[in-house]
Length: 446
Ligand SMILES: CSC[C@H]1O[C@@H](n2cnc3c(O)ncnc32)[C@H](O)[C@@H]1O
Ligand SMILES: [Zn+2]
Image (cartoon, rainbow, N blue to C red; front, side):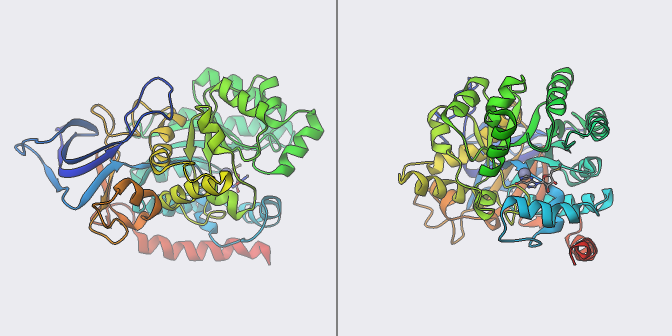
């Protein structure tokens, strides 16, 4: 294979630097002007103030642009792009039991491919190139990731409600997904186990997942402590809170990615810290479903790894992590009544380097450093949202910009969007198919 060189010239570079020592919150962001970055195939080869153009296949002018690591969404359900606006203004239980699960019963692989395809286009357009997904028909989602050029950590969502037959099927599905897709598509796809939650997954399923996650050396993606009702349910069954219960059965380890973590006791925070659990904060979904406010400022103070997730678009209702960064920060400020809670710098780390750490990908992505994969975005600084550019661009990224300020998106060295033009999939055709598919799926609710 011939070596491909891409050069990004004279750009304003903003990135975290991986501290490599599990200190998640103490390093500052790099913010330097007139930098050039050389990409050799899929990797960052050089970062310097001047790089020769000779032998370069593609030169991107970085004037009026900001270069940063692309964003990492550590919790979503990509095929749920079929269900945006289907069920709004409801709390989690009603939303799931009366709307979402009935329409999901009509899903098939092709529909999940379509939903994931649209989610992937939405993510590329808004600057995300890596996402952690839990859903059904994940073989089809993996194909959409392969075709769409993104990076993803995929998990088959496992629900058994204590039914042994269901449990066996879930393990079969999950192990097949691992064997077929883990480390595939040029290493862009990884697979985790995905027990849905301690309510929907039995103790046997959870202990089985821990055993198999160790066997296959993969992580675990799970919903935790999202609503007060869920905590009461576990307390009634086990006389322990959810993290205490999972600790007791030996489920917890540093490879566990726990989504939501809204309602946490002090003891649970200590367990999260001790076990180095990775937390995915989903402020948009937690607000929309009126679930509550996660105590992120307390977690940061304890140096717990907190990353950022959107959840699915049926509860968010989009996948724009720029919007999510703003919600993330503002919600912490209003919760603590402290304007210094979750600063813009911390929020960018949350959406980049901590996302990488949460997925076990910190040696590959999450920052712009030599040897890392070329997953990065160019943001248009000659735009109203990013002006005046003589003020803090870091502030603009979190408090003012949204996904539409992203101009160019690169994943694994491939340019997936350039000057706002998508290089993958056919958006118009997919949206036509989406409307047809959703109108059929919705009929079950009438
Ligand atoms: C078993 S596949 C994943 C499963 O999770 C459902 N889901 C989507 N968002 C949430 C959420 O915020 N909490 C709990 N479950 C959620 C999704 O609809 C699938 O059924
Ligand atoms: Zn979820």
